[in-house]
Amino acid sequence: MHTRQTPRTIPEKPNYWSLELGDKGTHNFRDPLPVYRALIGKALNDADFAALAIASKDGVLAGGMAGVWPIVGAVLGLCWFDASRDLDTPPLRTFGGDVLAYGEDVLYEMQDEGYADKDIGPVLAAFLKRALNVQELVKEAKDRADFSEAATEPSS
Image (cartoon, rainbow, N blue to C red; front, side, top):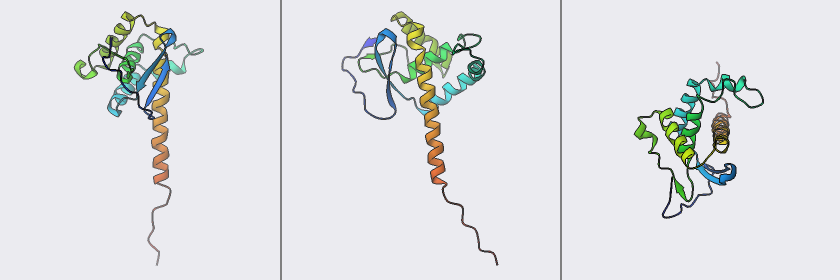
């Protein structure tokens, strides 16, 4: 992680958000492009995240987070949009689309910078909440567009 020479302006738009990461303070994020959201969704599906979440006890995933942590790292890297710091991990495309390898590299970088698991864990929950909200907005827009019935031909 390195300090930006020129601080970035964080737009006040719906796809930009901030999150408190433990004692590391408030960090800024940006929703990733749909293609990256799809890659994250596939990785979560491959890790059987839904079954882990359903079987959780008091928010603790059954079977642990071993398969999910690299996905947390990928979400963190894909959404990172801090005003004063950039990640040193190369972009996902340099990993040939391997979300888990990318996520592991991001996690190592965060660990090297002194971030604890408890600091970065909430990023996945925030991302999922936002991603589900996007799906609800798409459904709402589709429902509004389909508000009238199709015209029928008069019967003779």
